[in-house]
Length: 193
Image (tube, rainbow, N blue to C red; front, side):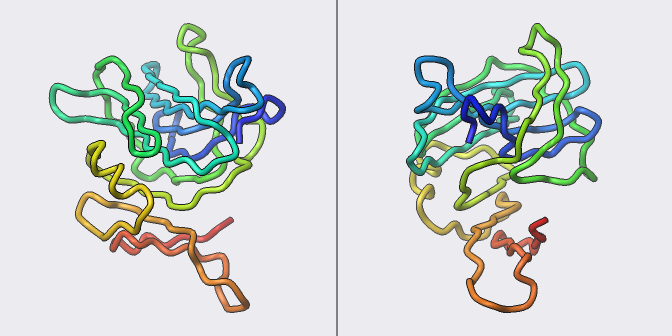
């Protein structure tokens, strides 16, 4: 995803009234426009926003972890690629998003408004063109060693694991082929729309 021709593409988003979390991809700047994509984690709360980006090589499977680390004294965004720490934002006051009832979307999202001084609005021109193998949401920061150990294997249910979509539903002909099973132990099964 995220080629120069396709513009910005939403990977996942949970947002309500411009308050929320967005993870998106777009082409990396020249000279890497055709070989790399930027993955950006953006959080917005009213007029406040913060974002960080990492560049990944296209054409190969990449494990991406985008973290909003709210630990006392930390309060920053963190990005990991293939189980290795890559980037962190400066510390800032992470506000409540007030988006509990908002839908979590994967592969599409709403445009996000932000000041020009912060990079301007984020406008999505297409749905995500790419593949997702596992999609996990934890409600606690992950260590580099945990990410590295679990990047290529099944993750067992635990309290901090809130959603675990493996996209490994069986093939063939059966009822409810649009159902996606949550393996976190929280039974947050969903439908593919």
